Length: 71
Image (tube, rainbow, N blue to C red; front, side):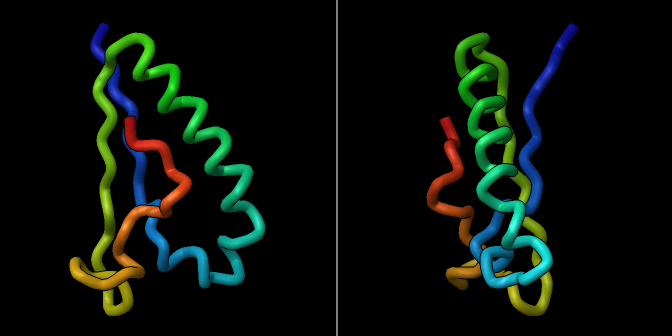
């Protein structure tokens, strides 16, 4: 069976969102633990960033959150 980890919309712009902010740290803990596991078993990890009026390539709000482990 093939598997991959897909990380969606973990962009800096969500740090300013009052609805998302309270759960960001605990969410990052789970995601970062999954990244470590997928790295150990050498499975691919993909990140997807959504574009909208506030988050577009080139803006800081579009960048991935610094504490998110990528590999």
